[in-house]
Image (cartoon, rainbow, N blue to C red; front, side, top):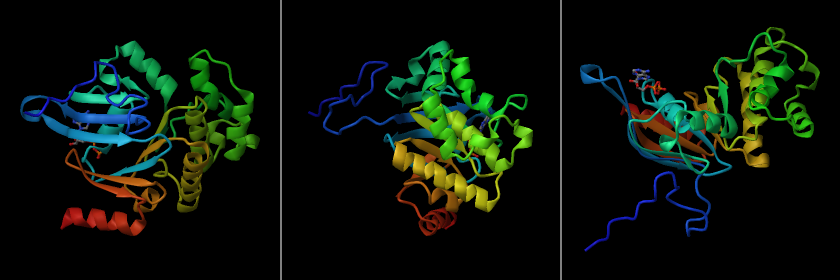
Length: 263
Ligand code: ADP
């Protein structure tokens, strides 16, 4: 007779520290289901997704429009509640947390970078960058602030408002804002979608360096195989399922995976 698996208690990570498999993942989905709507209008956006993300990894999530990329990102980040299954972030089981704790977890453990930058227009670059700390009532670590700002080439731009900055500069401010809280995971949604190729490339190189040199964890949604090639893992979603998991994706291997979808 096979023994039933011993499930971890609610709120506990199934693979605690010190287990043979090593460090627990920084984010994980177990049998994750997300359904929008009800009755005939029901849409299964995620259909029992199982995935783990290791600390210090850079993952690109790809797939056709409507395949569930944004939903996966939003549920892993605690922006959206799940329908069934379990979601862990930085050791916390998000689906068991009350709203206030979920909000606090997002604020303290997650950074976001969006295609449209989402900076506050009335604030200067510096004010935008330190906003998450201000909201949390935390002091700015000036040394870390300078380190981030210098590495992003923003030192001369700190008193400018977003309208006085180029698209690339605005996105670098958004990245600095995402990094300033030392988040466990940065979620990036088409971060280069609104940038020209050269600026987008510089930004992807920066994201890759932050993973390799600072150990940052990044989960990025993109439809661009060139952007995915900067990641060290490429997940392909179709109809709410992960159908491909590519190690060290290249433009060619990503294009081949996407072509297989149409075959
Ligand atoms: P992608 O990011 O890959 O384009 P999404 O995660 O946005 O895909 O969407 C997955 C599926 O869920 C799609 O069929 C989409 O129409 C549906 N969906 C997404 N958000 C909502 C919502 N708020 N209400 C109803 N359906 C939604």
